[in-house]
Length: 271
Length: 89
Ligand SMILES: Nc1ncnc2c1ncn2[C@@H]1O[C@H](COP(=O)(O)OP(=O)(O)OP(=O)(O)O)[C@@H](O)[C@H]1O
Ligand SMILES: [Mg+2]
Image (tube, rainbow over all chains, first blue to last red; front, side):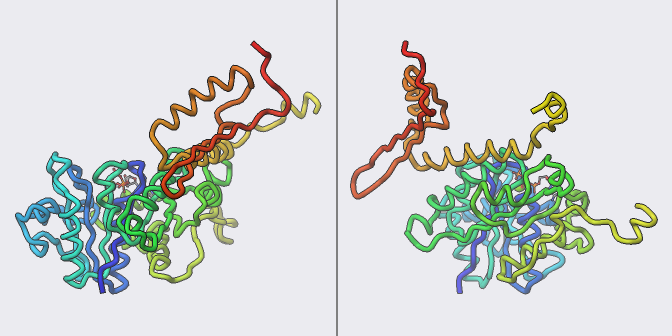
């Protein structure tokens, strides 16, 4: 069995790719899968902080690609899940440090090491880094915010996924595309200030695999270096759990997409 | 519609405006996807020429590149406004 490669991508920057990669990888590990999550953002290492392993980075992705370290040496084992590993991005300013052959070799090695999933956290944009992150993918999670520029960019990314990947070039069955709507604010949608789930689905012609609400718990989680999916009390964490389950094939209804109705006690006593 | 109705009319929700704008731009960008880079520029220049004769805007011009064995066909269609040609120069 070879590893399934999942790219988390978006086009536009700052929409929640790294937040999603960390939670997706953790969620897959919680489901018992052996998972590696790779930071493709050369020069702007971030995933290590969100995963909470920044002080244990010795070797990085570029070291492995250049043969300066083995993949085993560079993989950082997660503190919480023994079947979860992080491969940090290099801090080099050389944007050409990654090559297609180098990336392919790393992915093949992970596959041979018995990994079930490799999650690739793409950099923003549609340049080389983003291209390399998506090229070998079997699945894509396209992260989109309910906002005009993000929606437009995700449409471009969907187009690139359908044409500029190894699967597309070889004429194999296409990448499975999952649209993930994040930073969703049902209250603003209700008063017509924000695009709704349905609006985004209609514009892009694809249904969402999940909706992650805008949540203050995301910042708290990144402050602590704990992927928000582990915060089981937060709506964002629960929405990520649902999303991972759907990606693994389970049917679950969307939650947290409507304005929360106040409970009986809250209505009586306020709050 | 009375003046009161006019005053009471709410502005269109911004999300509706956003959706409409996205619908148009996404359709436009999809139609030229994978096509040569000069296409958007050519489309604008064509618009300038067409505008000399008919009053249309960019959305009215549809460009499609079709590929079939060996050659490419550039398909251009212009939706004319109902019966209103621009005043002849
Ligand atoms: N659901 C959410 N609710 C609130 N804040 C969020 C949510 N998702 C992401 N954020 C915040 O948005 C910011 C950007 O998130 P993140 O770094 O994951 O985006 P990115 O797409 O990886 O960015 P880049 O393109 O720079 O790599 C962070 O400050 C993060 O805490
Ligand atoms: Mg990021």
